[in-house]
Length: 232
Image (cartoon, rainbow, N blue to C red; front, side, top):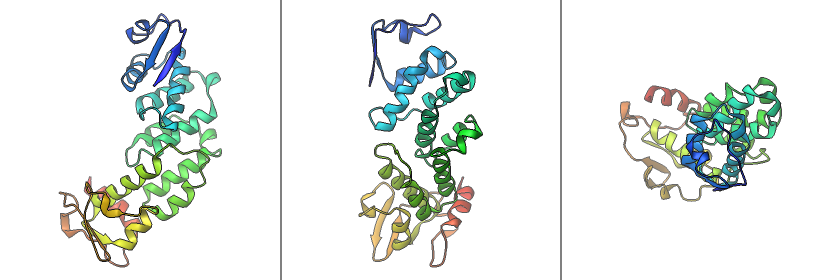
């Protein structure tokens, strides 16, 4: 949570702000409402930026509406734009994989920012995730100077979820290569049914049981993208 200190509210702001005159606690609900109702009011930008930074630090929940409001305000007021916040927003959206949040954010970020480090590495990471090149993704991910707190575990779970969506079973070694650092794949009981020998059995779903989807020896991770698209 963030604190507003001695903040006088803009006349255009909603009751969220006007009801908290000298001090305001910015919750996920508050920032979502502010982002939607006052997304083009530059007055709220510093507080939205604070929320973005707090999300990166893991002290506030991820909020796509807040991130999008920030980059929209930057488009509206380029003089207020901060390259480091652009990068933080891109990083947060990237780690929300496999959502489409990054696609929405990227369309609002200037190409000049996207081509500059470290934003360009964030987008390279996103491209590797999209292509299901998970081993390469983790190498690029390690190059990022700042990562959202807890994002490693979050991304491992997300990748396992994508694999579970696209196949019923897969070789253990192939799964471990996709989620390096995950010492106990079987602990993801919401995704994994069992680990037997050198094989991971994912929980059956409508998608992964279609056409008896199984990763056999020699099947590359590049196939995951096609399988995911077919499962949608």
